[in-house]
Length: 197
Image (cartoon, rainbow, N blue to C red; front, side, top):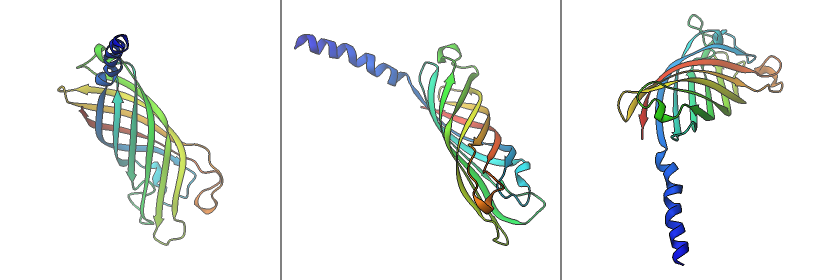
């Protein structure tokens, strides 16, 4: 009995140490979506334009090199151009679950902390034209890959800079909403405030 109790006492710190060493990053971001390409109906050719985007990340990072994050990106007006009024409203949204690869925290605690991350999830596209002839509401399985750097200004607050590529997997013919197989891809450049806990 005493031997079992001793083993348990030794194992508890070993098991709890990794959890205590891990940290959460909550990061609201904003930036731009650009280099959009799609086979979905785009009557204003708006995917070629640069659009503002709002995004957010929740990441769990250990002291080692591997972490995880959930990522959401919302781009309003993705199918709209500045000089045309054929589309009432449109957007794309990405919901992704990623693995993050970083340098060990002890190497650069208060300098730039580079990272790469990528994973899989869902791309959602929506567009409503003025005439109501070709509305788009579709979900596409997709992936993302990107990288950047995080720099801390204080023990709890920092900045995150990143460049990221999103793409849907080749889909099937969805009739009038797309020309041939559905595809959707774009890039984002973002900056955000990291809240570390």
